[in-house]
Length: 432
Ligand SMILES: [Fe+2]
Image (cartoon, rainbow, N blue to C red; front, side):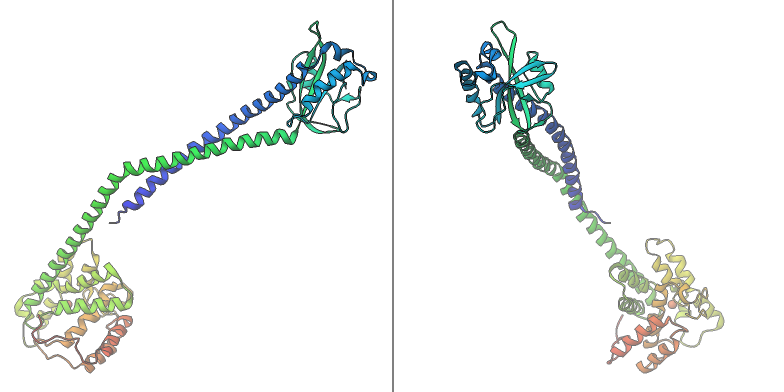
């Protein structure tokens, strides 16, 4: 069983982070859009304030009577000087007087610009905001326009005469780049403050979810430890039961003490050399331990018979694989046990029993155990013969390669024999 509380808490943290990030991002985008609208409004208000101040400082009665030829006169200077004060405002590019000539035509009047001023009577670019100011309402251009001096957003403010009528208009030009710079500067400030809020919220959400998840994760960790301990206990118990059973099987035959354990060890070594790892090695070991479990059902008298068996007796002995199958068939969590017990007397060429399976039709577990079983049988004293010399055993395995045994596992067994120069891999005196 694989439980990983670490991963679980990371998943929960990630989920919380994604939810916070998404909701905050949506909030940020909506807020920035709204804030930009507000920022634009406030910039335009500032532009209007400047234009209104300028128009308020100009005398409408004088403005409406001024002619180009008045340049240099006292009343011309009054208007000129009033506008010149605003000309020097760092935000305003140009500030000047405008006259409504009627029919949508507007012209410059007094322009205090030092370099390249507009000529008195020169045409002013028409905009909606200018037309609005001509009707008495100060206004700012919604979109920028271009003229000979550049690209601008302009604020227009009407100048009233003593009778309350529009006597002229004061235009204040703000360059597009100034407008954009103002907008992006203030937008950036807003975005940065939202990012700070976002990071803070994320950190807070992480801490809160960690705090709320921690007890749950701790319990999970305890459970994992408990489950692992139980699993180990179960495995140990299973192994002990299998060892006890193996001992019971071997005890029936005075000559085969320790046979099951040795077959289990040889089979595990063959499997290890073949590439098995971890649990698969444990399974093959268990299958080795229990391969002859069916012998429990064979009468002691037949198993321990010192001389040759009758045909009938041999038929009884031959039933032990099927009996083993019956004994182990309910252990469905480890089908290798049944495979080892039922088919370890099958031959690779199909001449074995009980089913006459051949080649890969014989389960791998059984093919491995078959080699290990034959090897141990030959190295042990039996009721009917003595243990065989190592060289003779080696020859028997070699001869059985591809006929009795799967050649792959026979080769591994041969290599094991070749490495065992002192012939230690056999039944030891007194071994049980
Ligand atoms: Fe057997």
